[in-house]
Structures are given as structure tokens and as C-alpha cells.
Image (cartoon, rainbow, N blue to C red; front, side):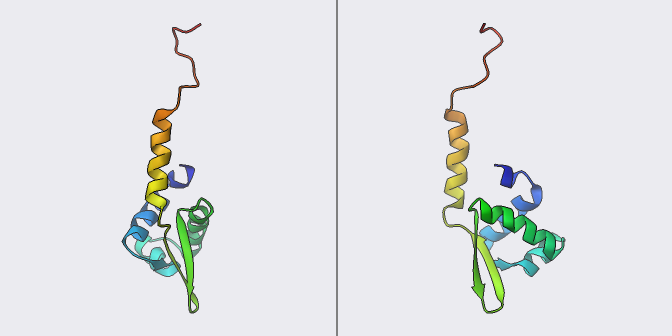
Length: 91
């Protein structure tokens, strides 16, 4: 969830859901530097939401095939857990 707590990374995921893109294309679409894009992609790669593939001298990024299902499962698990904080009436 922390990986998607930054609006820029959410926008990246939305762009990559449409098609595979390189750092330069993402930077232009998002209006940020290529260095900033690379830092955000590093986070998304680390948590497994994005994959990369070399195409000649470029690296193209895409959403991991199971990214949406993994996010859904995580969110659903949040609502299935027992609360860890006692209610005010509990003593």
C-alpha cells in the first residue's frame, strides 16, 4: 500500500495499465524528470507491481500481469482481519 501512497506512482500505474512505456515517455506524460520517474519505478519494481524488459538500448516498463489481483487481495484482506485495537467499551 505504501508504494501506491504517492499520487505520481498511482498515475504511473494508470499509464502503464494502458501500454508499455519507457522512462522518457513516462517523464513527458507526467511532467517530471526522468530521474524522478526512475526513482518511482524502483519502488514499484521492488514491490512487484511493475516489470521491465530491455528492448535494444531502451528499457520498457509494464504492469505485472497479476498487479491488479494482488492489490485487490491486499485490500480485501484489510477488511477481513480482526481489529487489533480494543473498542472504548472494552476494559
